[in-house]
Every structure is written in structure tokens, then in C-alpha cells.
Length: 305
Ligand SMILES: Nc1ncnc2c1ncn2[C@@H]1O[C@H](COP(=O)(O)OP(=O)(O)OP(=O)(O)O)[C@@H](O)[C@H]1O
Ligand SMILES: [Mg+2]
Image 1 (cartoon, rainbow, N blue to C red):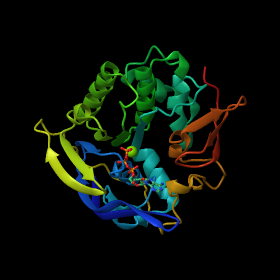
Image 2: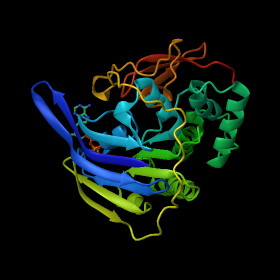
Image 3: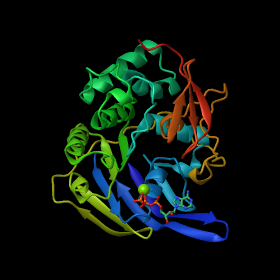
């Protein structure tokens, strides 16, 4: 599913160069459950962002489902990301004033899914994470673990083959963290490929394989001595056409302009929920600002009961 070859990432900060990744090579099969561990600054998030098509390498190759990421147009990268990859973060990244139902519907607006279908899919996704009875709750009316489950439901709603999670239990107490890990175990058993970045070896132990990074290099890649993740036949890439890569949206500048379709509507779901600060205005438009991705305004096109 994922094939990374001699991947390097260098951040240039003025006259200083930071080698976040140095010639990293790894492959991940569909159905695997992989933990990425390593000290702070070792390159875990950088690798995760490249795997998630949120950032791009300085050198080397990244193939996802057989397609070289660098050969895709920005639009196709965004489409591929929206369709194939779900993201889960330490701080949940939920809209402060939206119901669980609405948070989970959001990715479907970018996929131009009709409102009634989006509603049904979001409800189903919330049921899948055990929150069928919390669909109208806002984040401040949910526990931390429930908020993370909303975020997982949102990551699942497009039925991605791959979930990328960066410290998904980092903001949770250990018992709540265990609930999230049990949910991940279940998702993996259902065939979803999972890549989880963590500092916590207890979290990593849930995975079937642990990759250890140190100073931008893989220093260990070992099986965890549990049963392997259920291998799945790779699904075809739907319409991920090849094209030349445009200037990519590196996260370091905070001003990338990815995710806008011709009609001006942001179609990049990542830009909607990967942001650190997302504010929603009274008229139903969500203003997404700052952080890793973009400044973009997304129209939330229908009412949620
Ligand atoms: N946008 C950026 N601009 C410049 N340097 C960066 C940027 N992002 C990361 N780095 C540097 O790249 C290196 C790897 O960072 P990365 O965020 O991948 O580490 P990490 O393993 O995820 O750390 P942590 O466990 O603290 O989250 C670090 O030295 C970091 O300072
Ligand atoms: Mg990190």
C-alpha cells in the first residue's frame, strides 16, 4: 500500500538546514498495523505527514497504492487523501461549536456527497465508534475519549483504507486511551491499515510492527510478536490521474493554498480538519485558520438537525 524509498526531508530555516528524514525506506502492506516510535524531533510527524500527502519529501520516492505521489497534481493528491486516508490527532481537531454529527459530515461536503447521504453516513460512522447516542453533542459536551471517537468517526466516514494517527492517546488518561486503542484494534481487524505515531510503548504494543526513528533514520523495524494484521487486497485508486506536480503545500509556511477546486469551494477535507484552530461563524461557514494547512473558508452547505 505504501512504498517509501530513500526518502529525505530537509527543512531550510534561514541558513540552517534541518534534516528531518534521511534516506528512509519502508513499505507497509494493506491491512498492517504499524507503530512509529522515536524521540521527540526524530522525524515521526514528518514521515506521517508525507505518508498522508500533507507534506512532500525533498528527495526520494513515495508511492501509495502504486502511484508515485510526486506525479499527481495537487488536486489529485487532495482527492486521493480525501478518499483514501483518515487522520486522527492528539488534540482531536474538532470544530468547537459543531455537533458530533456535523463534524463527521464535514469530509463528505468536500466529496460533494448529497446532504441526506452525508447525514446517514455520519450517523453510521458515529455508531461504529460507539457514539450513536451522542450525535447532537458538541465537543464541550463530550469527554476527551468521546471527542477522540468523534474524530475517529470523522476519519472513517469516507471509508478510507488507511488511518494515520499522530499521538492519538496523548491527550487522554490511560483508561480512555485504552478504549481508543481497543477501537483501533477493531478497525484493523476490519481490514483498515493503521499507522500510529506514539511516544508510548504501551500504545505501540497494540501494533503488529514497530518502526523506530532516530535523528531522521530508521534504526529498527521489527514485528511485535503478535498475529499479523489481516492482509487485504489493495483497492484500486479511483480516478487518481497522473499529472505534473504543482508547487506543493509545505506545512512549514502555513500559507499553502491547496484544496481549492475551480468553483472556489475548498474540496480538500484535510484543510478542514487538520488545522489547529477552526472557528465556525454564525452563518454556518467554517473559517479554518493557521496551523499546518491553509487559510480557507469552507461552506457547510446544509442544516444539521
Ligand atoms: N515545518 C518545519 N520547519 C522546520 N523544521 C521542522 C518543521 N517540522 C519539523 N521540523 C524539524 O524536523 C525534525 C523532525 O520533526 P518532527 O516533527 O517530524 O519530529 P517528531 O518525531 O514528530 O517529534 P515529536 O515527538 O516531538 O512530535 C525536528 O528537528 C523539527 O524541529
Ligand atoms: Mg510529532
